[in-house]
Image (cartoon, rainbow, N blue to C red; front, side, top):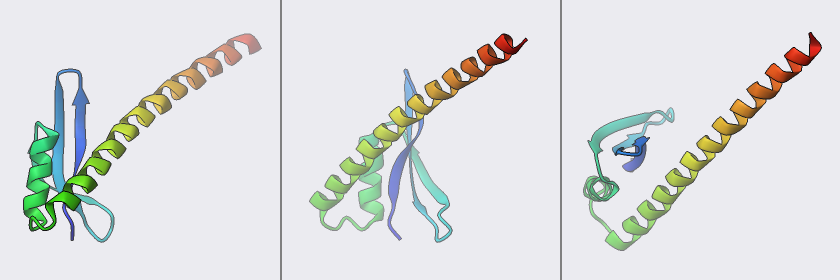
Amino acid sequence: MMYVYKQTEHSPDHDLFTVGYYDPSGKFQPESDHNKSEDAAERVIILNGGWDLQAQVRILKVIEQQQKDLIKLREVVTDLTRTIMELNKRIKKSEH
């Protein structure tokens, strides 16, 4: 088992990073919460035995970037969903 962290909350004034692991079924099992990604990364390194610190830091940076990319993607999907809903409303109005 390998511990990871992920951003579980994001707002303009607050971020929350949760440390945990994925069980065999793929469900995330939380271990602790942190306000800074650096603190979460440090906790992950400790939980994973602290081996090869440089490799751990590189992996965690990749994971952090992927989480940022997912947040951006979620925003794009939300915008597209709103656009589709608006277009559907316009279509329904034009049919009447």
